Length: 211
Length: 211
Image: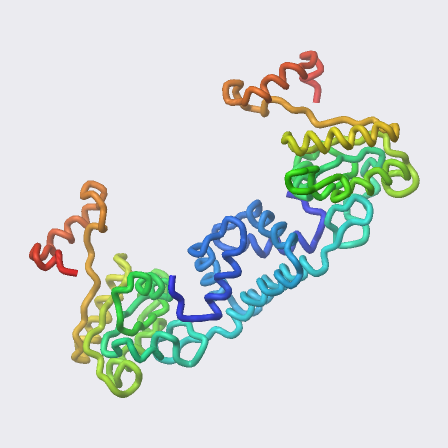
């Protein structure tokens, strides 16, 4: 694609660095931005720049935050004795969307992956152990339960195994989210490992009907 | 989707204003940008801001340009006696990609569309007629031929009809790009209008085999 403008060319190059956006789409986005008013484009670029420059890590849970303590950790209505451990901020968003969890989070910032050279020390594991030791908000209520909500991958399982051992030593109840057949799915669409797990982890019918 | 950060929320809102990008994709893009170095994100936003603030219209052909005269109009190797009229800059890019045209362009900035309240005066038609009158680069070589390369829509046809009448009065040869069956396409996949047009506009076999 030949473009007669270095300014447009450069903007297209930059837009095309985004995941899932090829040069054709990048060109379409650039031309759309060109059609907009100057102050609208300034608002667009400012929002992105400020997000990157001003967003920080919550001192408590390592989630992204506008302040030293994030909105979830600051919410007095949430149960500070319950901590849900997740890989990254997308998982926090996904769990929040379910409205089924009223505790706090702890964002690891990844999972243990020897292939990628990521060990426990590269993740926010020390911060988690410290929260369990000193209370989830650094003083006050002790941690009653840590829910491991990690992906069902080898790396997720390894991380869960490691954290369970460390947390168990600290005397906390450690639980893990259920694996099984998706709600609304047919059995023949599930993979063998998931179906096998759902049989192993079966529970009394009466209990499964409870919300 | 609940997000605990107003900064992230705002960036996602802005990214989601782009065409074809929903909130889920916008979130993915925002998180990707968050992972990058601060100077990388600054380069990204600067490229977009500069494109919008500094890009101008070529005084000659109304194409976008970094300078008062665009790179195509400034290229002495191009045939200034041949002007290809297109709707917008995307068409310039598409035609340039074919490497089959060595003349200059004229970007109308739209097509005549009474439904959208767009008449000839809302487009860069006066500039085109002036180029035909005064020479395509404002003096020097006269315009030998104007190629109308407009979309095959009602609006494109209306615009072509109007321009042909005005340009014909000015004594220029006016041509229009061929309509027909796509290269590599089967006949049964073409719509009736296109197939009918391709029969009406048939040409001697020997001639059609020439490049």
